[in-house]
Image 1 (cartoon, rainbow, N blue to C red):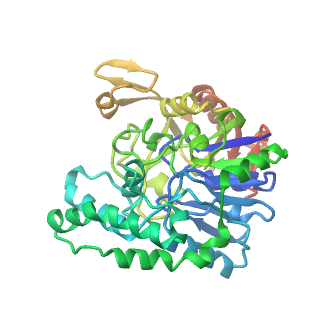
Image 2: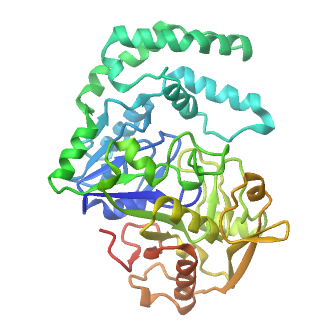
Image 3: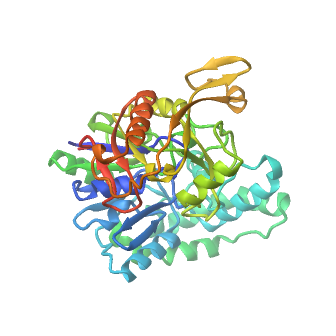
Length: 427
């Protein structure tokens, strides 16, 4: 199978890292194609827990080549912090490949990200303050700095000079911050050149040749469908394309090479940051999901907003991405609930919507229409086949599968690598 895409089908934090890791031993390349260190993947292997932010999850699988694609924005300091942290724990990171065309996050964009959010006040987007948005804006404005520029001091200096002409005006005159000098930016980035060079390559050529040789390439999204800059809950979104369409653009792999799209959904729903969230729970049920599911950001540590499963969002994600298979994660978190509501539609001003409202205002005012399903109390963390699940847990999976637009091929019943029920092969 040439290329497979893994995407989040909600607002992120669905467990993409575990799904990627589950497949990692069967694929040859794992490619991160969008985002930066503004999202995190948590992977549990035995008693070891790894929190990855910028590195692809395949970095933990021996024999798998991890790739940072051209669609990623790279904080080089964070990249080496992660590399050093993994090497200290005995993980070999030498196979990592970084696209020469990926954009670099300079320090001034992190400053701008933070001060802009403070300036917006109640209208803030809820960014992580890591410079992701301003760096993507520079990319579109053709003022960005790419990885390859770091190795040519003359080109790097010219690009930094061009970017700071306007940015220093904003920093000093709008936000009352000090101006950033060209020299300090160039010096900081150039300091990484020698160490970075062995990792840098033409990743589009690398991946094309791998596919031509019959190798399997797994494309791993950061963030998720509902945070996609085009198809998410705009403007409360990330600044990149987190859908399967973005996988082709962010990796340089032709869309005709992609044969399967795997969508990751939690058995409930979470969101971090601002923006509408129809099934959000602001009561003890939300607290239960947060505590049982450990719903605190891998990158930020922020408590996640929690709500019931939203099949309208799942159907939308299935359609936008062309999902062929879903991986349903954290089913075990629902254990102990007497009944479990599932959102099957929205009520907007008395009108029932079974598909995503096209108008953002309608989505903001959507009231979930719930179907109550019976819960279960049995421990399911040791189940390794669908038949081992309690009858009510089986019924829950079947119903959300029916509502979501694609088959539930894998069911997660715990955080461990082995705690998964495989109903259909993903490769």
